Image 1 (cartoon, rainbow, N blue to C red):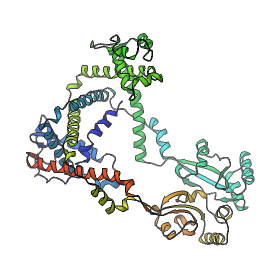
Image 2 (image 1 turned 180 degrees about the horizontal axis):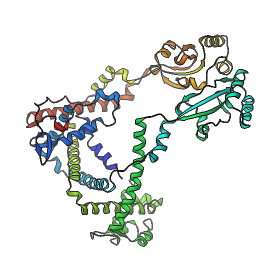
Image 3 (image 1 turned 120 degrees about the vertical axis):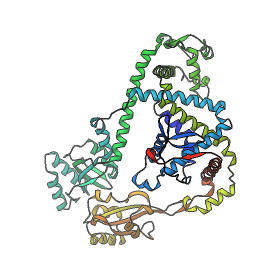
Image 4 (image 1 turned 90 degrees about the vertical axis):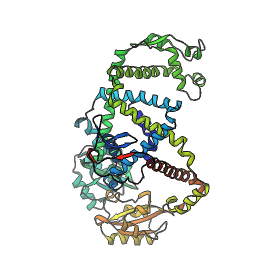
Length: 558
């Protein structure tokens, strides 16, 4: 439940935050100290209604939320964000002038959101700031950033790999035995360790590595026609601020869910007494007395301290809402009774939270009232768009087709390539491999038998492991080496880290434009949204011209 309200309000307010997102910045007013209104600094006034510096600062924080350093140039300025808030305020005021805020559907949504907001504010106050300790964070964070430092050798023959595994089992040194196998021509690889991310490791090794401790060696694993043994040299956990923040958020949410359950359970003990024997005895699927009779049953199932009980009928009617295809079908498939306990749990939970919030006076507090004001403006803004602005949008089939033709590149699937590769220690070995292929050798045979190969883990750092990749995403030198290549071709490429690659082009898919019919709906939505944005901006501009708008200096809101 916690967090659902935020998603609901976000959807309702999406128009306010997106439609006005690209508006031009308002002309800056002369720098003035921010005036005070009921003890709060005011960043702007729209027809006498203030936009506080706190509201502006919150909008600035929301605009920057989730942005990376690379997005810095796309961040809205303070002036742009303030203009967006002013435009939203102007449209909400116009919506109220024409009475949209008094529509029953609007009042119903505002009432629903207000009830949810009351619970949300109660939970924030009741649970407080939820700390996350390093001990709680560490396991999840490590799972996000873990890297493996490994040494690997590959054998052509399974029996040779098996002998090495037996020697390791008997206590032999991996480095010494691997070096001897490489020197004797039985295996390929190196005794130097390589650091790899889990995503770059062949899938066959994932389960083995998860069970290994540092210093362990894997069983023999068949990979690409060879037989590989790896040694886990070290587990590395590099610093990653983004991964840490993600892990911290997930741990906090888990703790919050647990604490919220305990908190609401305490409120139930305080505010409600459920008749559990009566609840256990109810059969909403039985022919007698029947579901409709229970829906009219006024017997008390739960008593609250405010004298407004929960009846059997309340539960039955709430159960009815659970089944979009009709409660009758649910009764036939015996899916109703199993939900009665959860429904009672949810209904009593909502009620006791509301009772506690009213008892604490949260409904009269600034945090709740500001939340209600925010969601009311979001709902009214959305209704204005739906009932007024949408009617001003004109979009023809010709507009859609014209956009498609002018932006065809955006609807063209890129050229894709599927590669296999062998990494060599020097260019001479790579070219010798190419000559063997040109004389008729199979690539799979060469991959096992060619001399001078590097550790296969090194080649996994390039997109040449049989996955389809976009040619435009290949690194520059690699792209040049594969220029004009066709399926079945072989190419040599001298890549980074002094590794020389021999590529086999397994598949090449040419760039292809999507037919107009396949993207018509997508473009229609895109163009409609752009035209709607223009209509909203036009409304805001006209309202600004006819309204008293005062913008104050940056002060603490900037």
